[in-house]
Length: 442
Image (cartoon, rainbow, N blue to C red; front, top):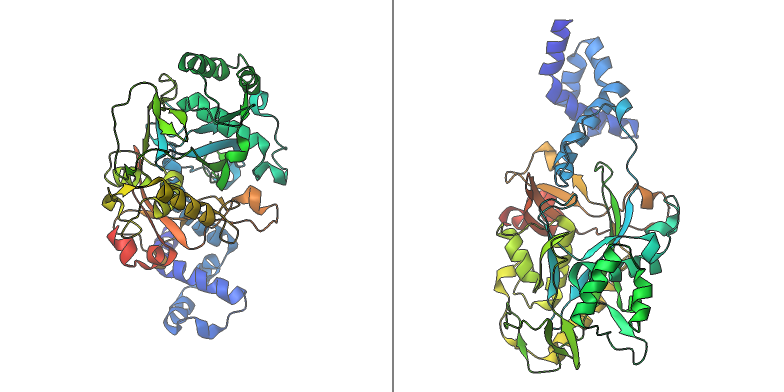
């Protein structure tokens, strides 16, 4: 028996190659598709070993090992240990919790990110877009977990996006009931409202009505949905949105980092309105809140100065292509400081809106559940990164049979470390799998 085990170990490499080829045979491929040398070596193996190598048990065992290895980094990225249970002990995937998040665009086309506290149960210390879980008491009820509409943009997700943005940043995406302008609430009342709503002491819509306003759900632009992979214990189905605050009505501004020393609780006036400066929630969930150009956030992440998870990095990359006038798609450090007029700010916003409406499906409907893609030829990347494919929508959405899917042509490269994702890059699918110049250089 021991000799047989040693023999199996010694031929593990050749068997792993043969397994894939035997599957081709099962699917109707001709014998000519198999290299003659491998066939010869396989036929020379003892009959018991040939039988074992072609058994369903061995194929499943090998597939499980490859899947576990591929998903290890993906699981670790969310702060959990890899799932190593046997097939019979594995629990069904967790039901994704519905949530919403907003890429909030400032009057100067910068993006708001908040830094999570170290003690956070999700994305500790990472920089994230404002957002959070849907609350039935504030936002309304969603369809049941097995209903296909649960993973579609609707009024519940939109109200959750507006409420969470207010709770986490103090910026109120609401219109007054009179002229339809952005609702302006004095800072003391805003801060009191944040605490009351976060503590579930008053419904969000009730508080808004008391202030003479309503949530600006119509101003939200859907910008992909993300479903957490099934191997992660804590899963979400997150609807992402864009929201554009009014552009500046004053003199041109520069595209680079901006700090005007304004400490009166308001940003510069936009279209005659005062936009509140984002603030933290007092350290409950976040420690910092700041607007920066999308390219600046991406550069900080690539330099290891902040933590961005793949969804945030990927969406910021898309925004940067339209907002930051980069000389090349990934030249995040080359953002221009040339003054930009209000007309140009609006033109760039229009290009982003047009981009979001393109694609098959359009970006407003894309659904992405990142999956680790197996390395080509079984070889790991020399830089230690894995390739996250973005084309799958997750099993819950696939089960709908609607044909929704994610992004086909781009992938995210990432190295999952104990403190979070590092060395992220957005590359084409061919660069990622073929080791092209883009994948090797970044």
